[in-house]
Image (cartoon, rainbow over all chains, first blue to last red; front, side):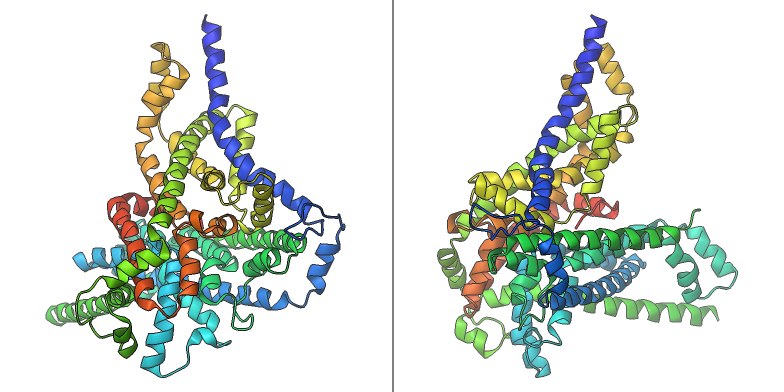
Length: 287
Length: 282
């Protein structure tokens, strides 16, 4: 009797894992394996038959002239977006963390509200602002239409949309810094900047780790907002790697090649993500 | 000395408040502009983007609703989001519970935990083309049911990871007591464990409602037909086609903002807690 009960508990533990595992296998594991397979074929995305072409797709990636611009664009997006997002998010967090009464709470809510809006909506609102408002006030061309300013302009949209997330992560990091550290530093005569530089920044390393890794990799993958703001234009000036992969499937009918690009891209993303994350982890201080 | 010090503090505070108000205005500006524009007629918009509307008319909303088939996409988004979040919570709470309780002693669960964790690094781009191919073969393209399956599958690893962390922090004694009292494992989970998981369930649900509601990448690949498009895909095409008709376009965008903002006000606590705890993916 007793043994049966134990074994039924054991079975139950396996049963609990099954539903999640099924969904996971269906949406992640199987496509992942299929993806490896597709990257070795010349599948065009439409027909049912295709041929295996060995490593041809991967070799083409390195000789493909069209891929250079998307790579450079994605890197520029990542650098601008990551720097902008973290500087702004930390400043907003420091501001909200000041003792300024109710205003701080209102500001926190306001900075976070755009996070709830989709990338499409963000792109639409800002396209209007760039086209009708910025051009009128500053008497310049629509920045989304110029090759030099299109990426910074999209980064600004993205900052409005996502900076609230990092602000909250920095804010909870700031709340975890023990107050007595600041008090001790003030007694020792440290200036405000010294306190920030020597106490706040080192203590925030775990938050930096999360925020920098997240923003860097998510900007490298930039897709939806740029697609709906400019379609990668003008003349490919804002085409990112993700848009290029998408176009290989829907526009150029080279799904096999697109998949090979995305395989290499993911290897690169994982390398970047893990090295940035270990860079910050080494600098974390233990109390 | 003390007096000048406190005076300096006061000035500092005033400067901070002014900067704060400016920042708040800057962040609100796009939303306020959208509301203003949605209430104006086409000639009014072309005259000046800042001027207040001359009269309060809701023509843009009516026209936007009619031309965009807005109600249908709103329904589609709901049909995808809520069943998806329900499935995610069911699968992830059970999975997270069993992984947290067994990964220390059982190699299968330890492996499962590692697989879920490392899958968090996989971006959607690598799955885009295979998922498209798989759905084509299974004839699940343009099906909201298929969309729910894929959204649940791509979210379940992360949600499980959140549950594992939480279950590890709650003591086993209650479950053991229930077992001694003759309560079966399924009943124990349903009656004892799941109620204890309420805080993390709220966070998981709130975050995923937000993510699934705003999902664009998967919807763009899978939902091509007009009648199954969710709000994001709908807007993507609608804004592309009706570029010049700002009034109706803004009206529909305001309508699609309202549920999100209401949701945000209701779930703010859980969203903020979840993100502040570092539980965020991109």
